[in-house]
Image (cartoon, rainbow, N blue to C red; front, side, top):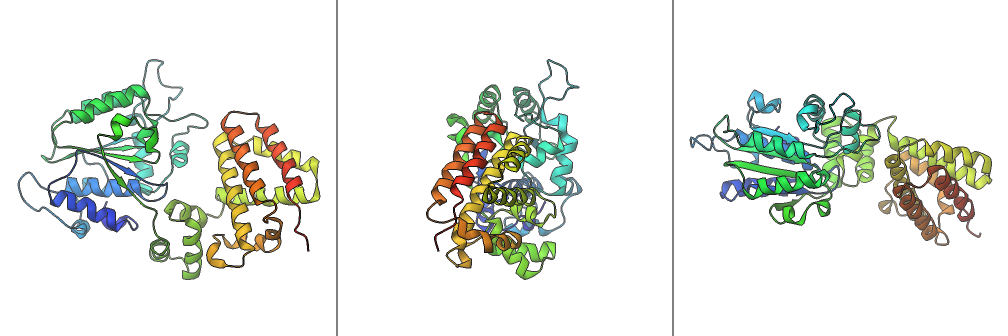
Amino acid sequence: MRWNEVIGQEEAKQRLVQMVREDRLPHAMMFCGPAGSGKMALAVAFACYLLGRKSQDGMDNPDSVDALDKPESPMLQKLEHPDLHFTYPTIKLPSMGTDHKPVSDDFAREWHELLMQSPYFSIDQWLAAIGAENQQAIITAGESDELVRKLSLKSSQGGYKVSIIWLPERMNIECANKLLKLIEEPPSQTVFIMVCEEPDKLLETIRSRVQRIDVKKIDSETVRKALVERRGIDPDMAMRISRLANGSWLKAMETLQADNENRQFMDLFIMLMRLAYQRNVRDLRRWSETMATFGREKQKRFLLFFLRMVRENFMFNFQQPELCYMSQEEEQFACNFARFINEANVLQFYDLANRANRDIGQNANAKIVFFDFALQVIVLLIPPKS
């Protein structure tokens, strides 16, 4: 994977190359940033950059971001380099023995297929790829044992060995302690790259031993250009999508999909508001039963979507387009609906959604939570005085 396949992040690219050029590459780094910012893409491109160097014999040492634009080796093109190791959260399949601790190699095929499609993917996409359903994916102690075994071997190409650890915050405590020891006494010529979204969940002792590199959101103009150049999107539509994406390439890709989750959430939001306005308690109960069929993570994502719609409709009332981040469909609905979200109820809507999100997170009965949620919307949904 080449540097130019990473969308934006020029500052981070230059910093990484400069560390190598000045011979101050740390043995352990942690890329932190929001989902969709390209942390994994950056990590993979940097790993390919390191593995593409021939530092051992002094030949062909590329020291610029553009140096990897030359043809890559087939191993790097296919991300099958023997000195490139991936670690990621896994689940326990029914076919696995009771004593077996799942490791990344158990899901190597699914991982490679997803990564080759695009290095921009979410934990939900990964869980769907491995058929996790409602299971929580973690990195087990068995994985740290595998890392020790793999990294203790000599580099097959005589250069670096690179270990990319995706979502290290999902390590269990036994795995985290073993990884800490490995980082404290790293094998020769080994570079650890952690790709993290919630660094506060990691052990403080691990955070203190890695160099943190913050990966910022992708700026809207870069997202717009990428949509036009890579996806052939109409410039006007690309501009709207880039604003809606809010710095996330994942969000931009979701918006392009005809039947994505946001479209479903939008339909549920419209249904909720219309039924609440009509005070149709019977159908609101059916609405809450539909919501209860979703998994808890999806229920929480809907509540986040609800909060975004409340915010956008409230801002729509100010008639300042630069303050609104809505799709064309969302904006069409807002033309008639936005006046119902105003200074008299906007804070109460926020409190309502946050309470529901807390209750769902604490495993409350979803039918009760969402039926009460819907009834409270009836109370709050009062049109402004003319």
